[in-house]
Image (cartoon, rainbow, N blue to C red; front, top):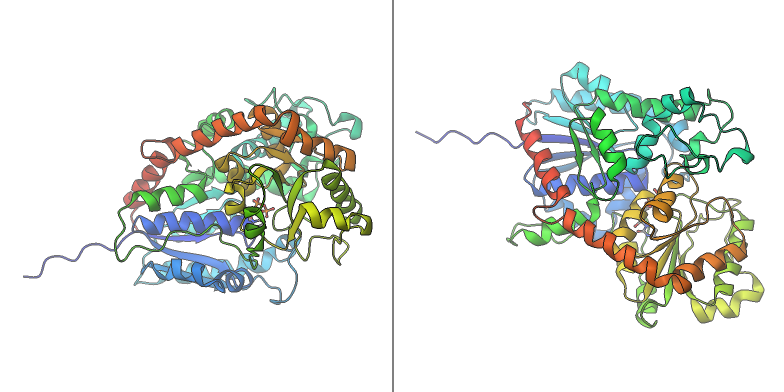
Length: 480
Ligand code: UDP
């Protein structure tokens, strides 16, 4: 008699919001789960998918998993239409309706029974819909735990009078209603959506509501680690008993890949980033020629745009600092359109001390010996990448959780400076020289400690390692 067939591996559908930062970290999670033998269906927007999979190395990584497949959906815009942070809202109803249709098809397919859905926590319509289909949903939030917790405390902030913020003169008031973070946050450090006088503002209503609704999911995954955001994580845990803090994901993946014994069928090591842009590696050759710890790396992520005034202030501030710099200026970085060209009188200095590229291999750059510090918009992925690389930061946050993250950098972890809300050449110069000069040793030591804690969390026996094992076990115990 033939031996009984082994049951198929659990099948997980992963569904991110269609934005670089969200897709990047949820793909890392997908890869971690696939590496542990789970069957994965990853729902990707057509626009992102094309840009991602044109890179042969990314394609090779995913085709190496026999049980990994992508399902592609349109985001409702033509492929050549530019994407900004606004398009998520304008195309939301369209994406919601076609995703629900696709989920229904996937869940009813007899050959691949679905064990659970891991959905971007900002898309909570999935929780109700999957509930009707009888499939558990695990929410994944791509933001910091501290920002998630601040959103969660929104009703308390209103009740206590912390919100609404009463104009510019109110911005430095200490916020007392975000438990565990009372000595950290001022109004200015709250998520950017809180900066409205009218509490019925659509975004202000939408984002905290989505956050409160995540409690209806089976569990919550955060891309953070316990030692990094202890105060917020322990508060969140009181509302989410099934909380898995498994970050920093980009590095956790590498840690797992390098610890498992190589076999002929194992996928190639993960590259730096799931980048939807064309990476310009010329900056690595440029960095190779610079002295150790002499360069400040400048990048404002994948969607932030700067106006002409801010661009000019950064150009002058960087040049006047006298430091070497590597700046990522995306082709769409200037809010008004056109290029953020170097002011004429700075050209010579920029050619001498600067390198400008459209998109850099950021993780590799941050680990380069010539890079001393990072001038960042404080996106959560960038922040985590800098933490892992042990690099001090100068923060210039623009939106969403970036306001909170930059405050963690300057006041909780003390690994850098926060220039929030001021963009002026003298401030840029002072901040850059702060992290590269006067306070360099202090910040570098604190950043080194943080990097060590991150490594411990992602090593066997560490908190993120253990939490990922627990997540995989829990998924295995769910019945399709
Ligand atoms: N990134 C990159 N090269 C660049 C600029 C950014 O690879 O030149 C990557 C970076 O490593 C990070 C992501 O883009 O993983 C940006 O995510 P983040 O959450 O920091 O910011 P967002 O783009 O969502 O605002």
